Amino acid sequence: MKKRKRMRILMVCLGNICRSPIAEGVLKAKAAAAGLDWNIESAGTEKYHIGKPPHQFSQKICTTHGIDISEQRARRFTPADLTGYDLVYAMADDVLDQVRRISGPNADYSHVKLFLDELEPGSGKSVPDPWYGDEAGYIGVYDMIAACCDAVIKNHSPAAAQTT
Ligand code: 4NP
Image: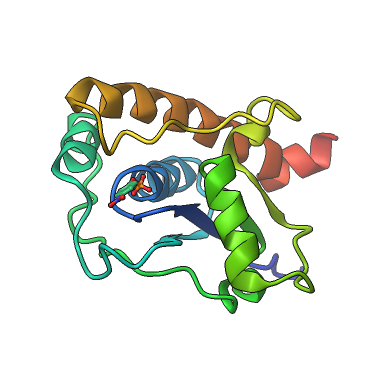
């Protein structure tokens, strides 16, 4: 039997310290629980936090759900990331704009989408940026991301492909 190609997914936000690290950690946990051997990573479009671990409140809400993201380190999104992944999810519309700015007008964006479009197709919604808010914001962001990760699993697992 032909071995199925390992799916590669990149989560992208601005700083790679608040939203996309949660998305990486949660989707890794959900994919593993579903028996899916997916390669899931994250990056940020800005350079401010390169090399830093996730924000303390991102780590805390993930720990509450049994997910350890403390080993993650922020890295910057590069144009090469567009060809290195099968799916690239932008956490928000400004992130999508930055991905396009970094990668240029001639790149292939067919596999790049707003993350929440996976849960609500065509909604154009963004995961709010919790950076300037308090801890409660990170809890809301976690819930939103977790629900959307369920949708990613549902929409892209081989089982889903067989039934649709
Ligand atoms: P993130 O949040 O994009 O979810 O990692 C942010 C983190 C830092 C900044 C902005 C957003 N910042 O301006 O430093």
